[in-house]
Image (cartoon, rainbow, N blue to C red; front, side, top):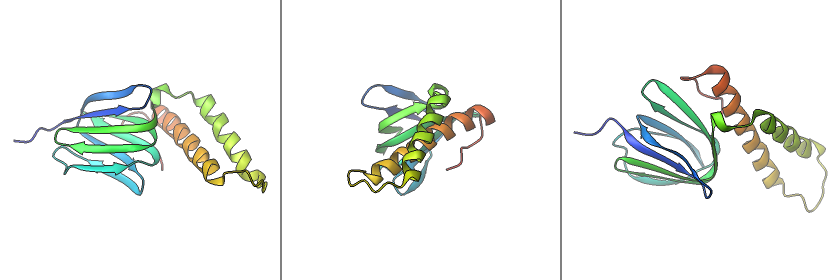
Length: 148
């Protein structure tokens, strides 16, 4: 008989962010979100920028994720993220400043040959994700999902 939970581990090069049994997880894959339930087929996927969410009992927890890989194995999901922060760890003022700064660079439209527009777009997406996860999870509470 299959278990109703599995272990979710979210780690970055700097620290372990999450390690706990969960009922389900949604991860921001490179090409869209993936939902993972107990007994999921093993897989390895590249991650994009977005909100990872997991459910444990009746509570939904959010983690902002930027890049990396997720591996699904029997009884375990391992997320190796380039960057990750739990919603309750995010500094909302810092995230708002990062969004404003990144959008300012985009709106300037300066054709500087040294501007890496791909990196600028990544910065905007990352800052917006961090802000959405922090504000929405804090404002709406458990059970809600940030817009993506």
